[in-house]
Each structure stands twice: as structure tokens, then as C-alpha cells.
Length: 245
Length: 259
Image (cartoon, rainbow over all chains, first blue to last red; front, top):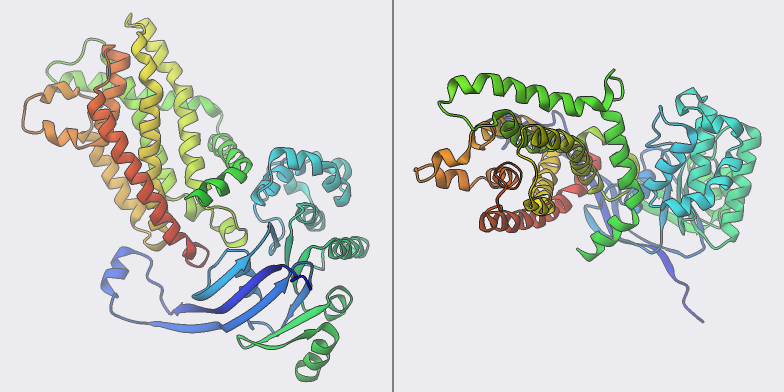
């Protein structure tokens, strides 16, 4: 059998944060307190290894502070592991925080260009997707008004429409399945289902177990910096509810 | 290195929109808008032109033109270094949330500064014409000098912007050095004043002196730039740029956690 390509490969990754009681950030403080080790090292992820194959839809679950989001952030290269390596193949879009980098004074249309360029798209590529993005957001004529005039729901709708139309091979999503009103949520959900069928790799961090169940084929339960269980979604959720529910 | 170039190329639209944002955002709320990038150096030059003839015994014949040719590149230098040093810190919000090649930010500051400088070169042209100095073919050296200055500045801000994240004093130290460097650079005076004296070699060590002298040579004195000095500066700037990318790359891994 042909080996299926790996999209994400996490190898022996440890991530620890230094917790300073009083973090030195000026030269004076650094010089005066150079030998005072007032930092606590807190290990968020402890020697984690996992592989996600191309086309898989995987959920990361776990209680707050278990390190799910940290893992996701390392996959996008916003932060880097203390030890170990993370290898990703293909273009990544992260929906960690929707609307990051929106400029309030620019119109929705201008922000599409600006935001999509953050995801590494060229002008041509954005032009080709512009109509899709605008129609998906259902903003209509509002698209030419400054973003600061949008309601928070409209803001999120635009941001989600951009991120989902970037056409990345890997999609990393952090707790944003609750965008907009009921109607728009269903639409997002459908779109994700569509992406799932089109061989995209999707990693979702969420507490909404119902949507995970219908979307993901595999779930990884992270507990206290370790992988507690990595199996089929139903099984993981069953166990998870037993312990944490 | 190859990976970096490829990465930057695929994010070229982000660079473009960042440059646009820098230029458009800078004077957005002010009444005169982009005109300030003309008025500011012009007023500074006029103040110097009024004050320094009293202090210096003999000044150059077309002193206002002489000063303006020094002030404008210097303004490009200082504004880029000052804005560049804090650019990562000022974009903390976006750095924490999205991945993109962080090098884009300092490059955008330097590039928008360059565009601003090129626009303000209209003033230089204006003064060259009205003082009767005119233009010579030596102006063809201009791109080479611009390139040298661009590379030199990018090398500096790659290092300072990354350091600023870890040691917030960087910007104050930089400010002090810029103030000091102003007097060590032949802007209000001519480098020829020190020809043959002890401090000539000291001035020659200053890359900005070499750059500003080159601008003066081709525009004001209408001679060739001192190519040896210019190429040494270019070479040193290229090394600085290489080190800058290395240091930046090393330090950038902690940006999202430290800002």
C-alpha cells in the first residue's frame, strides 16, 4: 500500500514557559537582577509526538490549560518548541484569532486584501477569490464601509470568510465554531465539511463535543501536557466524558 | 537564506500593503498630510541655515542647498532607525496571532522611508535648479548610493528591532547614538574642513559620513563620489545585513512570547 503523506509531524516536543514574578525587561533590571533566578519553569507540553496524515480531520480536546492551543500555535510557527521538532508540509491557515490584523479604518474590501496577504496570498490569487469571499460573508454593500462600522458578528463573518477561502492545505482552527448567528454557523459547518471532503487537513481545538463528533474522524485528548488518548472520535469523547463530564 | 528569500517573495503583497499602510497611516490625521514630509526637513534646514553661518567661520556658497542635501538623507536615516527599532514591538498584536515572515516589518519601514525620501528629493531638485547649480551626469550614481544606504539601515534595524523585544532600553540607547552621530556626520559642515587633520580618519569610519558625502559629491559638487569609500561602506553594509538576518532569525522565535 502506498504510504499516505504526512501533513503534520510532531516529534518529542516539549514546551515550557518561564513564569517570571517580575519580568526584567529593561537593561537596568537585567543587570541588577541577573543572578536572581526568580522564574518558575512551567511545562505546558511534555514530550509529545504525533502524526497527522494528509486529509485527516483531527480534534484536539482537553480541559482548559492542558496545552491544546499551545500545540496549535506551535504548528503555525507563532511560537516555537523548547525541545523537539514540528514539521508541516503545505500551506497553513490558522484561524486562531479571527480578524487579527484588520485595520478598522479600511473598508471590508481593503481588509480582505490586507488580511489575505497575511496568509501569504498574492494579489492575483486574492482577486480570483474576492467574489467568493464577499458572497460567503453575506455582507453585501457593507463590504465597502469601514470595518469599524461593523457589528462584532459581521466582523467575524468577514474574517471567517477570508480564512476559509484562502485555500490552504492545512487548516488550524481554535474554538471558533461559534461564529455569527445560527444561520451562518450552519453555513460555516457545511463549508468545513466540504473542505474535509476535499482532502484538506484540518485540526480543530474545541469544547463543543457535538460538532467535533460530526466533523472529525480522529480525536486527540491532551491532559496535563501529555497525550492521554488518541483514537476514533467517538471513543475518545466517551472516555473524556467519563473522566471530565 | 534561500528559504527566506522564497518566503519573502511569496509574502510580497503583505510587504506592499505594509509599505502602503506606513506611508498612508503616518500623516493620516494631520491637516497637511504627506506635505509634512517636505515641510519638516525644509524647516529644519532653514533653521540650520540661519544659525550656523554665525557659528562657523566660512560656510559653503549655497549653504541652504548644501544643508538640504545633507538633511534629507539624514532624515531618512533617523526616521527609519527610530521607527524600525520599535516596529516589532508596535505590531505585537498581530505577531501573537498570525504567522508571517517577521522580516517583512523592518523591510516595510525601510522601504516606506525610502519612498518618502525619494518624494522629498523634489525639494533637492528645486534647490539645485534655483541656486543655479543644476545637474550633472554624476547623478547616475544616485541608485548606488541609495542602495548602500538602504542596505546599511536594514542591517541596523533588523538587529535593533529584535533586541528591543528583549531589552526595552534599546530605543533610548539608539536615540542617544543618533543624536551623537548627527554631529559626527558632515551634515551641517563639510567633510573637507577636516581634510588632513587627525579626526579625518574618525569621520571616515562613519558609514553615514561616506553616504552623505557621496550625495554631496554627485549633487552639490557635481563630481564623482569617492568610489573607494563608498564601496567599502557597501561591503560593510552587506556584512551587517547578513549578520542582521542571522541575529533576527535567531531572536524571532521568542517574539510572540516576549512582546
